[in-house]
Length: 222
Image (cartoon, rainbow, N blue to C red; front, side, top):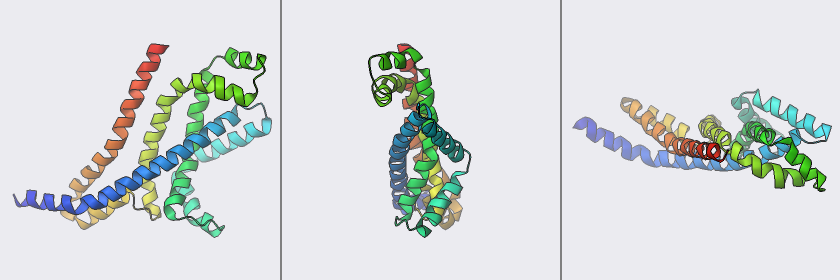
């Protein structure tokens, strides 16, 4: 009974801290997710652009950011950008780092969808006078979207977990809140970790179920 009472006390004590961290995690996910999505579509379009310089830039951008650790990207944003004169708080710098790191993964998912659209569709669009931007926006992207959504959701699930790295850069998101709770409640470390895991699952499981449902619908439409 004493153990249960103590567990309830710990739960009451850490819940405000966890909720604050959970909301910051959601905010990081929302800001970085939207930013990475927009930037990823742009990079994917550049990868298939008829302009060689754009293709080279997009390829270099993708290969560099996909092959360096997230920790290094966030370190650059948190400590180097302020030296260069960037006046943003650590939360926005972390969101920027997550956006940059995630965008090439979004770009590759989108590009795979572009490649899944028959070449004849683009040729037909050009034959009636559409430019490259119109062809991508009005013909290719709508057809590719059904194939792109499931892998994109997997990218956003990974982004949800990657937000935990922001805790190392003075952002009080969920993982940092968990570290503080575990340190202050040594007898209930497992309890604090399970609680945090449940909050992460509250984000990732709905995303996974959404990806599965969309994938099944796409298979039926095919």
